[in-house]
Length: 241
Image (cartoon, rainbow, N blue to C red; front, side, top):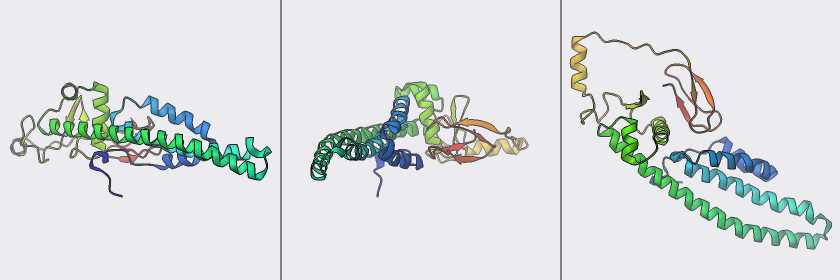
């Protein structure tokens, strides 16, 4: 299925999403609580809002099956088979209509959130490509909190929106040989080669292993220099910085 352009930056579904859907069939109230907590706790993350609506939708779909099956096997068990089936069908229809309306609203909110982040991502790309590398200055231009911009850029860097980019000392650092190197505010390839001729090339030895926190789910992973691994919980790529 082709992904809409405005939806391309939404995190990819993981095994956790499948667990939410299947778990909701069996233990809907238990699964709903952590999903709601994750939904509320990640409302400040621009890149994750659409994905949060997606997870909540999966949970509600599983919850619909849970409710119908629960009433069929527990409260309605005292009725005759024909009455039991009729009541279960009536409940399924009533809950289904309400569920469809809720899912439709959540789907609309998901598309809206992803479209908004797509617009933000393009603004980030334009600003950085034109030499604005300070995260604080970028936040002022896009009218977003500094912490939100930092999380957004970390996510986009992991998804290769910027070539070989890292965040260091409050600035986005791009590879000197990328296609935007001749634009204002960025070091040109010519100057880099010129300086290399005058002084010996210095090789920076990266530090040792360091703990990194996943910006998607908060899981902490120990990474070695130059190592990149997917988060074992949400699948978001983690890169040593």
